[in-house]
Image (cartoon, rainbow over all chains, first blue to last red; front, side, top):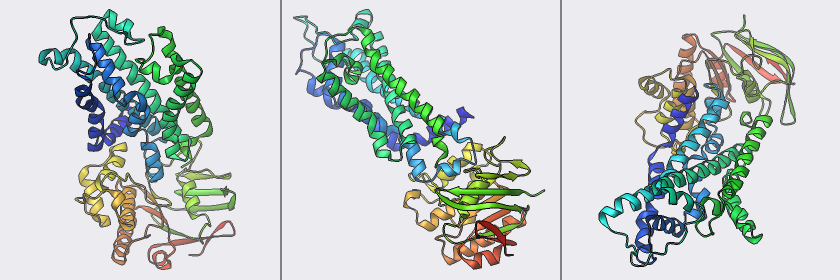
Amino acid sequence: MLKHLISIELKKALNLRFFLFSLALILLPLITILPIINGSYVFHRTIDVHEQLLSSSPIPLLFPLLLIPLYAGSYANEKKDNYLQYVMPRTKISDYVVAKGISNALITFIVAYLMIYIPFLFIQYIDPMINYIYYETAFMNPVSIGTFEVIAQESVHLYGVVYSLWVAINGVLYVTIAYLLSICLNNTFVALSIPFLWWFIIHFVTSVLGLEKFSPLYTVFPFAIAAQQFWTIFIPFIVLILFIVSLIFYIKRSRKIWEN
Amino acid sequence: MSLIELRNISKSYKGLTLFENTSVSFEKEKIYGIIGHNGSGKSVLFKMICGFVFPDHGGIFVNGEELGKNRRFPENFGIIIDKPGYLGDKTGFENLRYLADIQNKISDEKIKETLEKVGLHYTIKQKVKDYSLGMKQKLAIAQAIMEDQEVLLLDEPFNALDVDSVENIRGLLKSLNNEGKTILLTSHNNEDIEVLCDHVFRIRNYKLEQIK
């Protein structure tokens, strides 16, 4: 039943608005930022371009805010429009809510992954055929791209895959928090804004306290910080997982999904 | 055996006492009207019968099975409670299709046929958020009947409908009843109740009194 409900949710989510928004997220940085940074910065390696492309785009600053509109608000919308009441006689509402959460995670994972991986693919594999990006070859002095440099040293392709996965998984955590909060709180705007506020405020607080290595922003987009030990990126990650587990526990305990 | 039986139920809802030690039963293939002043508990009564809320005391039995024991919601109930529900950014047809997909029991043809029956054309491309209140109400009626539900709980089904639509829906409910459906409905319009209902209950002094 869960698989069937997920397929319905995906059908519901995949509309024109979704495709346009996703395409914009995936392609706009490449189309708009790359021409600006090309020639303005000295690039030695493909990963330098990828790093500069992302850090020059609004993606690191607005990360949760860009992904939440994809599908995280769907439960809140259906509750507001009394739609859930008409779902209840047809299936177990707990299955329906779980299916919605999984669909939200799945959709976000794919879009966030492509948002990082498609530019990487272009820079790494397509550009060498068309030679659009200008590389400095005379004087090689590459600057570290941060915490993930260690993977790039093993294999550039592995870097592309692992880093895209890392961003996508973090995206999934943020939209899942937004989704769960939309079940817990009556004010949808507040519920969907909290992950972004968390992203922004904790970044600010860790910066003020000199603990930038634990900033949510720098652990997902670790470009503006010196390479840290790898374990540091898992600290905010674990905090997010604990937050999600607490929210699920609270929803189950308070029977929130029954109170429409 | 009664189709639906309320045994000694008491219910307070949001700090208001609505029912005290009330018992009533509803038989198959009849149309029942429930009347009562605003806030008397008509919608809460329907919510209890379809398992959305539980009574504080007593039990609700559907086909002899108590709700909340092994089963949370009764099977094969079509409902309209409080107000229509919809996906605002989808068309009427898409709304019904997504709801029907959950159980996957009916075809597109059946949905189109149901839309025509309630007076909505399936070809309408308008999103439901742009529908008039009456159109939303018709869509709500369509979702309640499209899967040939055996029992219909219709809270104010004639809300916002124009005169012709009221006539059409009355005829539709009559014909569904003739096909063997059991219908419980509320209405503030006495004519709807008089024309349609075999039995009428009034909510007064926290009890359901049979007046017809």
